Amino acid sequence: MKKLLISGLALLLLFNSCSKSSVDSSCNSTYDACAVKAPQAEMDSVTNYLNAQGITDTAKHCSGMFYKIDSVGTGKTPGICSSIVISYQGHLTNGVVFAQPGSLQNILDNFIAGFKNGIPLIKEGGGIHLYIPPSLAYGSQAMPGIPANSVLIFDVKLLSVQ
Image 1 (cartoon, rainbow, N blue to C red):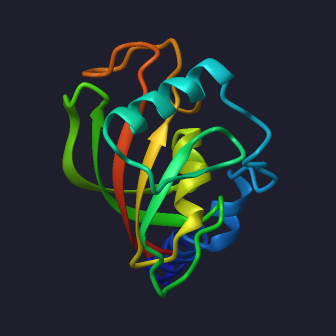
Image 2 (cartoon, one colour):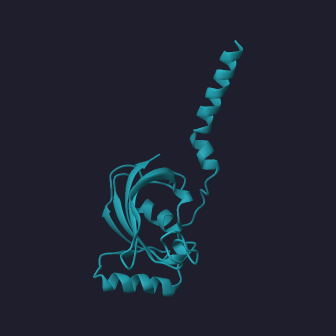
Image 3 (cartoon, rainbow, N blue to C red):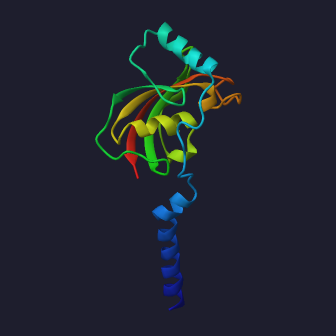
């Protein structure tokens, strides 16, 4: 009887820890995608890169990030508190690839601002190119394979939204 009670309690805790409310409680559900705006000099750097590459079919987000939607997708649209699965590749403006094609699952609120702003522009099954100024990525902090103050370019596909 004691084993049954303990097993039942363990299952209850397991399912409770996976519930949507426990995910939402740790998420900043009041995120404002336009609250942080890249400085004009950073936006100019992205614009110069796009012009030099002959990329003319991008849109500018209110945050100063640029993007090109490859396909909108047909599934769910992610919110900031959604658990998403993406596949992506990232490179610098000099062509150096810092993130090989791979997939990642996380709550959207845990990503860099450029992802938080760009990924909700597509639906599950969609794809987007993101051109992210430094202040919407890692800013003055260098990361492995990414120098400080780097413009980042990502090719992202939204595989799943929970």
